[in-house]
Length: 206
Image 1 (cartoon, one colour):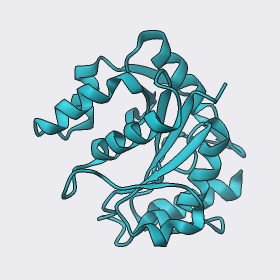
Image 2 (image 1 turned 90 degrees about the horizontal axis):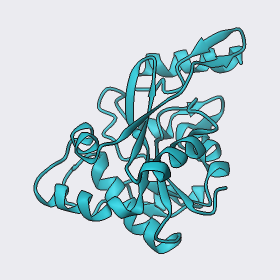
Image 3 (image 1 turned 45 degrees about the vertical axis):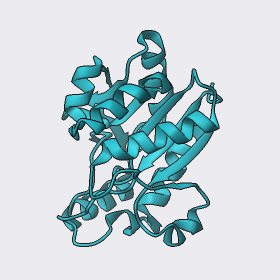
Protein backbone atom coordinates (compact mmCIF):
# COMPACT_ATOMS: atom_id res chain seq x y z
CA UNK A 1 0.00 0.00 0.00
CA UNK A 2 1.66 3.23 -1.18
CA UNK A 3 -1.14 5.80 -0.91
CA UNK A 4 0.00 6.95 2.54
CA UNK A 5 3.72 6.98 1.69
CA UNK A 6 5.47 9.98 0.17
CA UNK A 7 9.05 9.73 -1.04
CA UNK A 8 11.91 12.22 -0.93
CA UNK A 9 15.25 11.82 -2.68
CA UNK A 10 18.04 13.65 -0.89
CA UNK A 11 20.17 15.18 -3.65
CA UNK A 12 21.59 18.24 -1.94
CA UNK A 13 24.99 16.98 -0.80
CA UNK A 14 28.18 18.89 -1.52
CA UNK A 15 29.85 16.09 -3.58
CA UNK A 16 33.20 17.37 -2.26
CA UNK A 17 35.05 14.10 -2.86
CA UNK A 18 33.56 13.66 -6.32
CA UNK A 19 34.51 17.10 -7.65
CA UNK A 20 31.13 17.88 -9.24
CA UNK A 21 27.44 17.17 -8.67
CA UNK A 22 27.62 13.40 -8.53
CA UNK A 23 23.86 12.93 -8.86
CA UNK A 24 24.16 14.09 -12.48
CA UNK A 25 26.90 11.55 -13.27
CA UNK A 26 25.98 8.69 -15.58
CA UNK A 27 25.68 5.07 -14.51
CA UNK A 28 24.62 2.68 -17.23
CA UNK A 29 23.50 5.58 -19.40
CA UNK A 30 21.26 7.17 -16.73
CA UNK A 31 22.11 9.82 -14.16
CA UNK A 32 22.30 8.66 -10.57
CA UNK A 33 19.33 10.89 -9.78
CA UNK A 34 17.26 9.38 -12.59
CA UNK A 35 18.11 5.87 -11.39
CA UNK A 36 17.10 6.73 -7.83
CA UNK A 37 13.82 8.25 -9.01
CA UNK A 38 13.02 5.13 -11.03
CA UNK A 39 13.85 2.91 -8.06
CA UNK A 40 11.86 4.81 -5.42
CA UNK A 41 8.98 5.97 -7.61
CA UNK A 42 7.06 2.66 -7.72
CA UNK A 43 7.35 2.34 -3.94
CA UNK A 44 5.52 5.59 -3.06
CA UNK A 45 2.44 7.56 -4.04
CA UNK A 46 4.19 10.93 -4.43
CA UNK A 47 7.86 11.73 -4.97
CA UNK A 48 9.96 14.89 -4.66
CA UNK A 49 13.63 15.89 -4.85
CA UNK A 50 15.46 17.67 -2.03
CA UNK A 51 18.01 20.03 -3.58
CA UNK A 52 19.15 23.63 -3.34
CA UNK A 53 20.17 23.63 -7.01
CA UNK A 54 18.37 25.85 -9.50
CA UNK A 55 15.01 24.07 -9.99
CA UNK A 56 15.27 24.73 -13.73
CA UNK A 57 18.27 22.40 -13.93
CA UNK A 58 16.17 19.58 -12.46
CA UNK A 59 12.93 20.27 -14.33
CA UNK A 60 13.59 17.43 -16.79
CA UNK A 61 12.93 14.93 -14.01
CA UNK A 62 9.32 16.06 -13.69
CA UNK A 63 9.24 16.05 -9.89
CA UNK A 64 8.82 18.83 -7.31
CA UNK A 65 12.15 20.26 -6.15
CA UNK A 66 12.21 21.21 -2.47
CA UNK A 67 14.81 23.71 -1.26
CA UNK A 68 15.90 23.88 2.37
CA UNK A 69 14.12 26.50 4.45
CA UNK A 70 17.32 27.06 6.47
CA UNK A 71 20.10 29.27 5.13
CA UNK A 72 23.55 27.88 4.44
CA UNK A 73 24.34 24.17 4.25
CA UNK A 74 22.37 22.61 7.09
CA UNK A 75 22.75 18.98 6.04
CA UNK A 76 20.15 16.32 5.24
CA UNK A 77 17.90 17.11 8.21
CA UNK A 78 17.01 20.44 6.60
CA UNK A 79 15.92 18.52 3.52
CA UNK A 80 13.88 16.14 5.65
CA UNK A 81 12.14 19.11 7.31
CA UNK A 82 11.20 20.51 3.90
CA UNK A 83 10.03 17.06 2.85
CA UNK A 84 7.81 16.65 5.89
CA UNK A 85 6.14 20.01 5.21
CA UNK A 86 5.56 19.00 1.58
CA UNK A 87 4.26 15.55 2.55
CA UNK A 88 1.82 17.06 5.03
CA UNK A 89 0.22 18.92 2.12
CA UNK A 90 0.44 15.97 -0.26
CA UNK A 91 -0.75 12.97 1.76
CA UNK A 92 -2.88 12.57 4.86
CA UNK A 93 -1.58 13.62 8.26
CA UNK A 94 -1.16 10.03 9.41
CA UNK A 95 1.10 9.24 6.47
CA UNK A 96 4.80 8.47 6.23
CA UNK A 97 7.67 10.20 4.45
CA UNK A 98 10.39 7.85 3.19
CA UNK A 99 13.76 9.39 2.40
CA UNK A 100 16.56 7.95 0.28
CA UNK A 101 19.93 9.23 -0.91
CA UNK A 102 20.29 9.87 -4.63
CA UNK A 103 23.91 8.64 -4.71
CA UNK A 104 22.99 5.05 -3.78
CA UNK A 105 21.94 3.21 -6.95
CA UNK A 106 21.17 -0.26 -5.58
CA UNK A 107 18.96 0.48 -2.57
CA UNK A 108 16.24 -2.14 -1.93
CA UNK A 109 13.07 -2.25 -3.98
CA UNK A 110 11.09 -2.98 -0.80
CA UNK A 111 12.73 -0.11 1.11
CA UNK A 112 9.62 2.05 1.53
CA UNK A 113 7.26 -0.78 2.48
CA UNK A 114 9.54 -2.22 5.14
CA UNK A 115 10.59 1.08 6.68
CA UNK A 116 7.06 2.48 6.67
CA UNK A 117 5.68 -0.66 8.34
CA UNK A 118 8.22 -0.34 11.15
CA UNK A 119 7.55 3.37 11.62
CA UNK A 120 3.79 2.84 11.72
CA UNK A 121 4.11 0.12 14.33
CA UNK A 122 5.90 2.37 16.83
CA UNK A 123 5.13 5.93 15.73
CA UNK A 124 8.87 6.68 15.62
CA UNK A 125 11.27 7.03 12.69
CA UNK A 126 12.76 3.83 11.27
CA UNK A 127 16.13 3.75 9.51
CA UNK A 128 17.82 1.22 7.30
CA UNK A 129 20.75 -0.91 8.42
CA UNK A 130 22.95 -3.44 6.67
CA UNK A 131 26.24 -5.25 7.16
CA UNK A 132 28.06 -1.92 6.72
CA UNK A 133 26.16 -0.15 9.53
CA UNK A 134 23.17 2.14 9.84
CA UNK A 135 22.01 4.43 7.05
CA UNK A 136 19.84 7.21 8.51
CA UNK A 137 19.35 9.00 5.19
CA UNK A 138 17.27 5.93 4.28
CA UNK A 139 14.44 6.30 6.73
CA UNK A 140 10.70 6.42 7.28
CA UNK A 141 9.43 9.50 9.08
CA UNK A 142 5.93 9.66 10.58
CA UNK A 143 4.56 13.11 9.77
CA UNK A 144 3.94 13.54 13.50
CA UNK A 145 7.71 13.95 14.02
CA UNK A 146 7.71 17.30 12.21
CA UNK A 147 7.39 19.52 15.34
CA UNK A 148 10.20 17.70 17.16
CA UNK A 149 12.49 18.04 14.14
CA UNK A 150 11.65 21.73 13.80
CA UNK A 151 12.55 22.28 17.46
CA UNK A 152 15.82 20.38 17.03
CA UNK A 153 16.83 22.44 14.01
CA UNK A 154 15.77 25.70 15.62
CA UNK A 155 17.99 24.84 18.58
CA UNK A 156 20.99 24.47 16.27
CA UNK A 157 20.94 20.68 15.93
CA UNK A 158 22.15 19.38 12.58
CA UNK A 159 23.31 15.79 13.15
CA UNK A 160 21.13 13.10 11.63
CA UNK A 161 22.39 10.29 13.87
CA UNK A 162 21.85 12.46 16.96
CA UNK A 163 18.26 13.27 16.06
CA UNK A 164 17.51 9.64 15.28
CA UNK A 165 18.82 8.63 18.70
CA UNK A 166 16.71 11.30 20.41
CA UNK A 167 13.64 10.17 18.48
CA UNK A 168 14.16 6.51 19.40
CA UNK A 169 14.48 5.42 15.79
CA UNK A 170 14.25 1.73 14.95
CA UNK A 171 16.80 -0.16 12.85
CA UNK A 172 15.46 -2.23 9.97
CA UNK A 173 18.00 -4.74 8.62
CA UNK A 174 18.38 -5.32 4.88
CA UNK A 175 20.39 -8.22 3.41
CA UNK A 176 23.09 -8.18 0.75
CA UNK A 177 21.69 -7.75 -2.77
CA UNK A 178 22.62 -10.20 -5.52
CA UNK A 179 23.84 -8.74 -8.81
CA UNK A 180 24.74 -11.49 -11.22
CA UNK A 181 27.06 -13.84 -9.37
CA UNK A 182 28.21 -11.35 -6.76
CA UNK A 183 26.74 -9.71 -3.70
CA UNK A 184 26.69 -6.01 -2.88
CA UNK A 185 25.62 -4.01 0.13
CA UNK A 186 22.35 -2.40 -1.02
CA UNK A 187 23.48 0.89 0.52
CA UNK A 188 26.77 1.07 -1.37
CA UNK A 189 27.01 4.76 -2.21
CA UNK A 190 29.06 6.74 -4.66
CA UNK A 191 31.43 9.32 -3.20
CA UNK A 192 34.31 9.21 -5.70
CA UNK A 193 34.87 8.46 -9.40
CA UNK A 194 36.34 5.12 -8.32
CA UNK A 195 33.06 4.27 -6.59
CA UNK A 196 31.22 5.09 -9.80
CA UNK A 197 33.51 2.75 -11.74
CA UNK A 198 32.83 0.00 -9.19
CA UNK A 199 29.08 0.56 -9.56
CA UNK A 200 29.45 0.21 -13.34
CA UNK A 201 31.16 -3.15 -12.82
CA UNK A 202 28.37 -4.35 -10.53
CA UNK A 203 25.76 -3.18 -13.02
CA UNK A 204 27.48 -5.05 -15.85
CA UNK A 205 27.56 -8.23 -13.75
CA UNK A 206 23.84 -7.93 -13.01
